[in-house]
Length: 402
Image 1: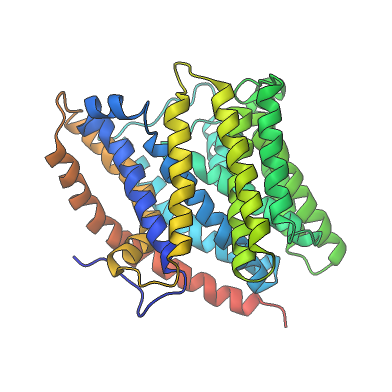
Image 2: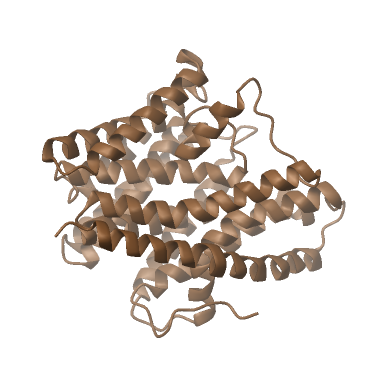
């Protein structure tokens, strides 16, 4: 089966290549639990492959997402595009996983005392990671930060501060560093522990719905209110109710806005000096935060720092090569990267439930896993992602204001 590639060279082919590489690295990180556990235990303290992949994803999102909103110039069509881009495959994968669980060949996580309704609503907002709800699939946690970024981007756009991407990145990174140096430590899901998971899910879902509706309204006052409301929700959940440390949640947002700062320099909306200065500040604060946070049973500073620096360097290398020809294999992998990201944990869950994890490392089985996964993802892209994106584009054109 041939990997899909867009016809002709793409101006953003380097971003597709980065997404494809990042997806493969994340798959390796998770598949190595099953097929190469000994090698993984030796590698992770030196190079956290999962963090490398997701930081590349976040940089790419930061570059693309605000550009998508500003190109449309309309919050309503932006949300239509995002919903049809993200939700259809997400819904298909979740439905598949639930069906496999009913058949007894995959196992759902333990949601504790949370009701099925609360878990469903939390996942429907895609903010479940920030609402004190375990992820149905582990990889879904990053989508919560993506959704928070969307809310912040819309907020800045509606109050006409969207050009301040560099300043936003520096402020967030500085707050991350200050939280570590001043010893500010919050428990995981602190707000959920304070007000209760159920009430928080109800409040956040209603707030998010109101924010999206108001920000998409025709009235300038309602648009302003909706944008600000969504931004405040994101700024409350990311630092105060995430499961990653406070500083890392802030760094994730700073990294995405760093990607936006690079986009603005590339398109003449800012200077390269500003983008470079922003990169230096974000990298310095992120690395300093990780170093001061220190080693413990769940966090190894060297592995995180190496992964973070390599992610930034990879993005920089892609940017420097943006006018060169990108191999179709890499752009094709980027095209199906969302399918790769969501489908691989389902396939791994089936393997773990039926065959079990290997006691000895097997490179051959790791490679065989990719050989099964990639054709499967080509099918999900062709029959789920591509049609839903086309529907979204058609609906957005009809909803675009004159």
